[in-house]
Image (cartoon, rainbow, N blue to C red):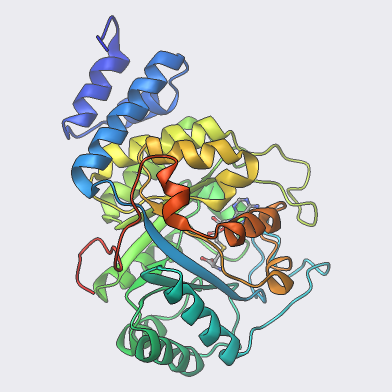
Length: 351
Ligand code: SAH
């Protein structure tokens, strides 16, 4: 397609060629409203994805093993003050069974996710990590929230390879308002520790948070670039009725797709999932994300009895059923013409 006019095309070309984008250029791309320009943005991101990480879609099987949380984030259904949440913890034996299922289904990575649950002390968690590593050999990603440096260190030594800790928003005021008792600086400190400990580090944000601006989203991109994230998860904010944000509006899926595309252009060879939250709002967007920069799919393997209670945002349970219903991932991704990746699919190709 020829570039008929205007600045956006030039910025897309600059971004595709790996030029260092300024904040205004990033916010300009995120605010594109012309459907042809948006399509050009997606196509550029799709080409950079193909060139930098290839055609394969890598699978990460998720186990949501506890929904207890001592934190009180105003957006999240697992927040401490949500008395409607029916809390659970999975037996270690159940976690091990699921890890085997995940391996059997061809995923090279298991993701262990939970609320911030102090029951899982460093020692208890290390036992689980070491056992999974020993019995499955899978790459292990943790998503357990903020922990002390020594816990992160012990997890790494026990065999964890990667850690997902979304920064949620790069606007420190917005962050402090959303996560009582927490600060963006504290979150960034954790991300830096994880990098020092040689984890592959995942960060990311929600799109469409109440009060969030396009400039805030540009700052999210800049922060991701500055910290050198290996993986980036981006999803729409979805209001949960048992939280203080129940009456807010959900994030816009096309804004999420534009963010995803810009992040692919800026970060080049990172791992970027098409996230569950995107699919909850619109199944087609979850597919579209793979044509706008995404290269990772994270099917949820939490059994239904627990999955329904891992209610971070409404609708999550339905997507879980859909994930579980995918009998053959290869056939599923055949429909968008992409092969399923073999092996762990880490950024640094080390495990
Ligand atoms: N306790 C872990 C895991 C959090 S759940 C941690 O703190 O990292 C994973 C992600 O779900 C969060 O990082 C957040 O970005 C997202 N999330 C939480 N509530 C949400 C909501 N209402 N809408 C959309 N995404 C949400």
